[in-house]
Length: 168
Image (tube, rainbow, N blue to C red; front, side, top):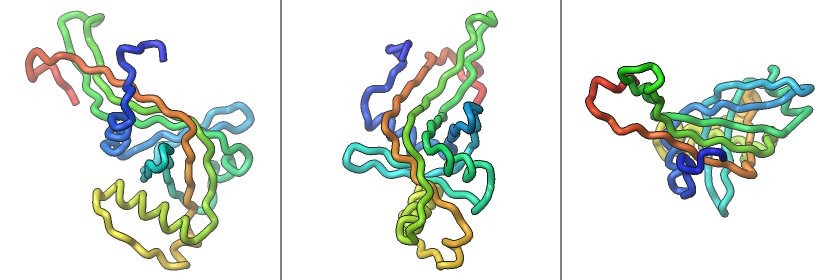
């Protein structure tokens, strides 16, 4: 990371950003052509490993790409604020973000799919309920697991001089 002064080192702070945000941009590649999609997600962090979960329909470009190339990257950001100043060159933008790389796989096992969907529901709703999806529901949906190999966090905060400076 070029700007070490903006780097988030502590894993707890990076996980806080992941927990706070609701949309992840998943980056895939097909024949050296990038493909990025915004997705809702769920996650778990166990044994020092971050795992992200996504879901989608059974067919589509994302599925086709993953079957050919399971290397993936992701980006999550939140707390985005434009900071206005007198001069254009003095404007700034506050943010918090996490970016990472790993391997994504399509889950086939019913229990793994059920667990992945529950992680998505937990993250998106903030409720720790155990949903039991029917066999028919599990057949209609693809569930993906991204095993993250590495991820970094970055933030930029601006001192606020007055409330009129912020545009969320």
